[in-house]
Length: 271
Ligand code: ATP
Ligand code: MG
Image (cartoon, rainbow, N blue to C red; front, side):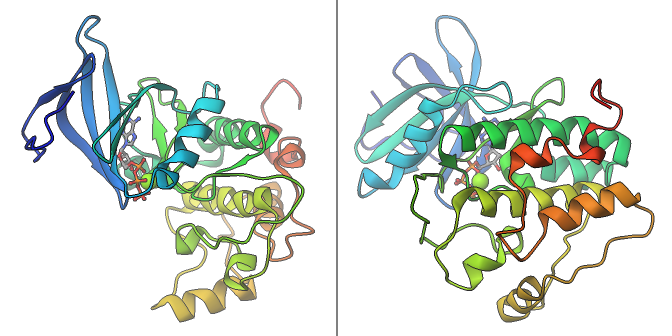
């Protein structure tokens, strides 16, 4: 077990359970992510270390990761709890985030975007089938493995949904659906569909469809639902973006429907 007074600053390494905790690889609003090595097997893993006051703060994230078993979702290997800190040992995605990839390599062509986009759809659709809504889908939370396959991560805002609508307003502003800004009870999966649409827009253009000088302006644009789609994108692609980024949640399709979309399936065995 780590010592209570362990120095956890950036360059310090320590042991916990059967792992050696190495350098930092990411920092988020809820904690720190480090590289770790399983001592017996030398396998590299990522460990998310979250300080919590109430275990309920981390329970949902752990529950979701434990429930989910999908090739495009980071696998959780082990959870260790110590002194109001939780260590979540999970699959390491060495190629960083989709956000960094777009920044480094620029936007994807439609052809190149399809395979990773299908993997994103598959991962999020699977969550919805398991009654889990992610609620923070954005390129910073979409990781890439060695083969540049998608690994959906960060279930810190996830929640189990049943028949009733959800009410907690959360997410990352430019990716949040209009019903969240309207402070209305909302259908969980539909807010993920909106965010996945914004991610597709960002993959294809390198920018966001809704940008404001401040939160008030951003909210106004998102609520209007009016956004510009570059003419260079194909007509089927325009149609898909408009279907997903639809301010009327009732008319926004489920991911099951989106997976049958013409643009999504172009070039696959189904088309
Ligand atoms: P935020 O609230 O800012 O979204 P967070 O505190 O919930 O973040 P995560 O998003 O889970 O934390 O992780 C923060 C960052 O750490 C990620 O954006 C990514 O760069 C890196 N990271 C997280 N998990 C992994 C992983 N399994 N493999 C590689 N890098 C990871
Ligand atoms: Mg995150």
